[in-house]
Length: 120
Image (tube, rainbow, N blue to C red):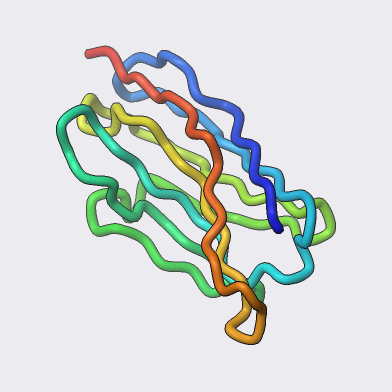
């Protein structure tokens, strides 16, 4: 089992920056992909960014050029650097971790979420 703990959410003004962190514990050596989803009030949870164990990244179109995902495998930590924030980035941000496909049970782990609020 993998446990995830996020931190870094805060209230920030439009145009500002934040860095989110997510630390994995437990069976962290079974993790392949880590990333971030976000969910705004009344909306579905959407993928923001993901990074594989080898460093391949993927971003939602809405954050390309503003957000950067990175990973420190030695620290079992994934980061999300968010720049040029706007009100549409306001949401609860959830870290997730997907295991390699040989791991059983093949279950995605989720963090508890961290609130990001951007004031205009």
